[in-house]
Length: 288
Ligand SMILES: Nc1nc(=O)c2c([nH]1)NC[C@@H]1CN(c3ccc(C(=O)N[C@@H](CCC(=O)O)C(=O)O)cc3)C=[N+]21
Image (cartoon, rainbow, N blue to C red; front, side, top):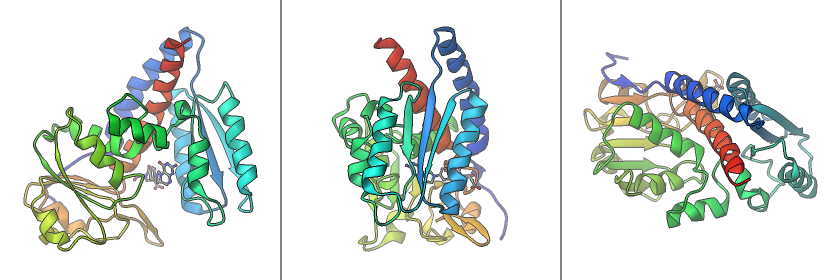
């Protein structure tokens, strides 16, 4: 690999700054007798999922949020999982929660995600909240897209009028990030690419900002990137050699800004999950 010329969008440092802000908000809530609680629901023993969930609980500890952990065996039935969702919906110590995806193949995720109380939706992926995002109503925002936008903002990467090419149409990244970036408050022009896109290289080459969330290691190569563009890697793949992103390492020699994996969108996702949790507690307090 040659010379890195891109400014690195440092997701860990930005996460730490957001945690400082959240700690102050958690202290203000404590004065009013409220402690936010974040729960995770994890089914099965996928090592990657376990590692992500561990990261979420460690983050809660740093910020002063109570963490609640529900680890369920791989052979958990749909009905048993639904019962856990109902318990968390009723649990006053649980302000927000997430069901770690993907679920084992024998479980149907959509009825589970719909069963989550939309007010406790840590991920911002409940159909009601995605619908509110489309309608422009206030609602918990999808954590990874919110983290990507926040990271670009903190480094003053211009969004208004920018041509953004998003690669991948998944429900956690590609699909909702277009919804966020095309709001009036962001005002970007978004092209959403996927496996049916005719000429991916051409779509990426015209982008001022590239968000890569396809889950295809090394998909975005240096020749595809406009010099000076901002590139955000969101396509985490776990290999024996460690975490690999969708963005080829050589892109760092062409891009103006780069949010790498690890150290970019991942820590920001956790920061936004905790932000959604604190906001849910603040909202509950305001609504009595
Ligand atoms: N309902 C649900 N919500 C999610 O938000 C969700 C999910 N399911 N399933 C899996 C993906 C993946 N994900 C990550 C979060 C943080 C890091 C992260 O912090 N990564 C660190 C490295 C962590 C490590 O080394 O393991 C980094 O990129 O620097 C990674 C991945 C959230 N996801």
